[in-house]
Amino acid sequence: MEKTKIILDENEMPKKWYNVLPDLPTPLEPPLDPRTKEPLTPEALEPIFPKELIKQEMSDKRYIDIPEEVLEVYRLWRPSPLYRAHMLEKVLKTSAKIYYKYEGVSPSGSHKSNTSIAQAYYNMKEGTERITTETGAGQWGSALSLACNYYDIECKVYMVRSSFYQKPYRKSLMNIWGATVVPSPSSDTEFGRRILKEQPDTPGTLGIAISEAVEDAVAHDNTKYALGSVLNHVVLHQTIIGTESKKQLEQEDTYPDIVIGCCGGGSNLGGIGLEYIKDKLEGTYDPRVIAVEPSSCPSLTKGEFRYDYGDTAEMTPMLKMYTLGHTHVPPAIHAGGLRYHGDSPIISKLHAEGLMEAVSYDQKEVFEAAVQFARTEGIIPAPESSHAIRCAVDEALKCKKTGEEKTILFNLSGHGHFDMTAYDKYFEEMV
Image 1 (cartoon, helix red, strand yellow):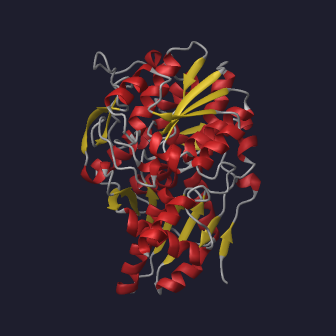
Image 2 (image 1 turned 180 degrees about the vertical axis):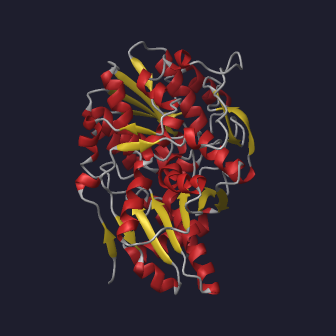
Image 3 (image 1 turned 30 degrees about the horizontal axis):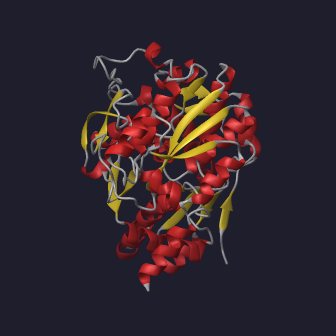
């Protein structure tokens, strides 16, 4: 079985994160204070974020140094491998070359550790004793639990209720690393209790879970809040993925025509894609960069580009982004990490200005591609990552029809080892 694995030496791991903000054609619209609707000052964010992350959120520096202490932890799994999917190409009978960057090699099983380690580190440096957060499918909650464990910080995770019960082993993983996990909405916060009273059968949403985590953080002086996607500093930390992938493709003497990532909040898409958007903005290359969403939560493909709250309770800053509305409750699909009503302001702006495309797929066709990928490449992908696989397969089939020899790169952002009940249900529906 032929399979090309392209690796980098540990010394070749990027030492800087790429910040796209100074390269954008027009400035990113500022976040607004949820009370005054005026542009937010950095000081207004200090109750929930450490100062260094606030600086990164608004930085005008093109590159930001990765602290050596963060690099030391990254070396547990980075650089992550890049594979050429020869077996998938063979089954598809395509003229395209398909490469995938595999982030499932991290201890938590996904790309989320790239930012959780950094966020926990900066919190530790500023004396934070406790961090609260939300999690959709559990990848982010797992990653932050691991990071807080390393830096001796207490961690409280509000896990979207539908995923809390769909994915029990994600909860187990968080408990192993010392975190406390509750289903959201919960009885631990005022907002959670209100939602439970008004909507006792709600599957929960990331918007609700964010509201609970922020309420908890604001109520405790020793606590900060951490977000796993959407915000600029989170996208920043993920750019190590794209920087590594470019070095790896140089070993193959190739450059991608198409770059693909699944998109919920937008961090893993930005992680793989912004390095190539930079080339597009500089005029050196012109790759297509494609965001892939679930059709049940299509913020980029069917949402409105406007200011909206990042959470349901209207506690967070208002962000200019594609949104379905902060009270939107998507169906309880298996790809819980993509059930967010909005998107990263960076990703939203790039899409609005025609620098990035967006497509959406339903759950069945995504799982069809996931199973095909697992049977050829041997890796069981997370439901979220499977959206990128579906798009990569479709683009490869287009090449089959035209005979074009395009190079396709996608981010396999996590493995599906804790998602087997989702695969079981898919096969049950196929019988």
